[in-house]
Length: 306
Image (cartoon, rainbow, N blue to C red; front, side, top):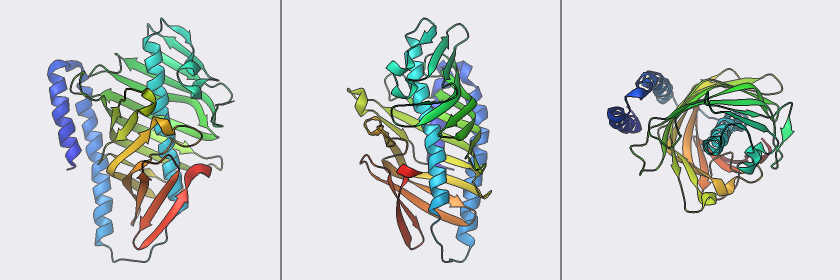
C-alpha cells in the first residue's frame, strides 16, 4: 500500500481526536483504495507482458495533462475566492481584485448558506487569454485553514476554452494543526472533460496537496504529493491511471500567460491500457515543456498550444 496513505491516516486519526465531525474522510478512503487497486492492477498487467516497441502518443498524454490542468486551476481559483469570502459580509464581491482570472466574472457570497458562486456568464476572456463560461459553485463548511474544514466544488455549464468541465471536487483540510503547512485531501468524483469535437476523458482522483506559503505570496508553491493517483477513460475510450512518483510543483510566480496551469517540476507515470509513459515536468523553470519517456524512446513537447 502506498506510503502516503498510511501517513495520511495517521494525520486523520490525530485530527479525529479533536474534530469528530470529519468522519466522512474515513469513508472516502474506500474510494482511494479502489483507485489504488486500479493503478496497481494495470501496473502488474504491464510488467507481465513481453516488451514491445512503443511509440509515444503525445496527443493522449497532452490531453491528460490539459484535463489535469483544468481541475488544478479550479482548485487554485476556489482557494483564492474562499480567502476573499472569509473577509466579506456576503453579497457580491470583487473577485477580480483577488484573482485576475475572475476579473470578468460575477462573484457572489451567500454567507448564511456558506455558498460562493463564480459566474462567468456566457463567456468572458481573462487577462491571460483563456475564455471561461458558466459557473463554479463552492459549498463550504468552516474556514479553509482550520483543520477539519471542507468544501465541495461543483459546476454548472462550465467551460474553459470550449472544454466542458464536470465533476464534484471535495477538499478536506487534514493539517495536523494550525502551525504546519496547510495540507488538503482532494477527491474528484465524476470528473469529465469534453472537447469541442465531443471526445471526452473521465477522471477520478485521490491526492494530497500541500500549500507551501512564502513571506511574499507571489512565491507560494503548491505541491501534489508523491503517490497521489488518478484514473479514468481517455479520449480514445482506453482506461488510464496516473501515479505521482515525485512531488508535482506548481509555482504561483509562473502563473502568467498559459504557464502555471501545469507543474514546473515533478514526475508522474501515466498508464494507457498496457502502455506506460513517464512524464518529467522539469527542474522548476517557468515553462510549458515536458519530457515524455516510454521504453527507449523520449520526446519533448510544448503544451502551450494544447
